[in-house]
Amino acid sequence: MPSGSQAVSLRDVTISFTLADRGTYTAVADASLDVGDGEFVAIVGPTGCGKSTLLNVAAGLLKPSRGVADIFDAPLRGLNRQAGYLFQAEALFPWKTAQDNIAIALEISGTPRREALRRAEDWLARVGLAGFGPRFPHMLSGGQRKRVGLAQVLIRDPKILLMDEPFGPLDAQTRQIMGNLLLDLWNQDRKAVMFVTHDLEEAIALSDRVVIMSAGPAARIIGDWRVPLSRPRDTAEIKLDPAFHRIHREIWETLKDEVMKGYQQTGGG
Ligand SMILES: Nc1ncnc2c1ncn2[C@@H]1O[C@H](COP(=O)(O)OP(=O)(O)OP(=O)(O)O)[C@@H](O)[C@H]1O
Image (cartoon, rainbow, N blue to C red):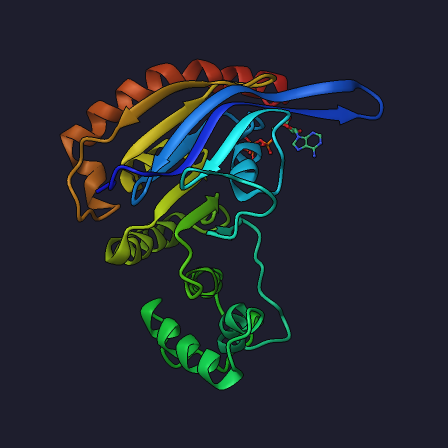
């Protein structure tokens, strides 16, 4: 459970982009969000509303135009070195084996190669890939590559995990399996997690809190729900729980109008 300190604290964050041809575009306006130490928070919103933009602020990849970002009560300057980042797109080197892909995350910060390889082997087992170390990414399934990606991030033991639709490209069953793996690993040391998804079911199944953003431009945080479901959870079975249906219905009431606005703006509806 949260220990009281905030791993990520965004205060009145506004993010505007200056576009060469169309002036200034404000993606996110006055967003305030706290993620407690050990807390799993999902951010859900319509397509293009600014979820990734907000995550990039927490990662230190993007400086807010207004407002502040604190990490463990200290102002974030430059890259957030306490965070590990897992994107939708794969970040594996195609010419390196699974084991090397995991080990490199330690080698770049100075861990001797032999030690890095040994720890990478442990992590292969922790993500259910014992024996797959010598395979190159093209010799692994999409789900297996995601497992390698997860190990690559977690081996550095970041205090905060920033995840941007990490299981997006996977089929529904593999997503569920990856969700369970993520929860198992998270349960072992409960890092703070910011998990961006457009999938409300996935958000509820995984998280302690679900935060809803409005459609952009100038997207805002318009809802923040505590998920009343006990842990440990199985991400498939939890969806049969009546409490899951109740909270889903409640959040969807707020989300659905924003989703329609988002589609209309992006020409999808
Ligand atoms: N570097 C940039 N320059 C200009 N506009 C940008 C930039 N980055 C993001 N945007 C715009 O800001 C808005 C929010 O984008 P963002 O990727 O954060 O949305 P999202 O909610 O993560 O979308 P999706 O769910 O489709 O991945 C979009 O309209 C996008 O086009």
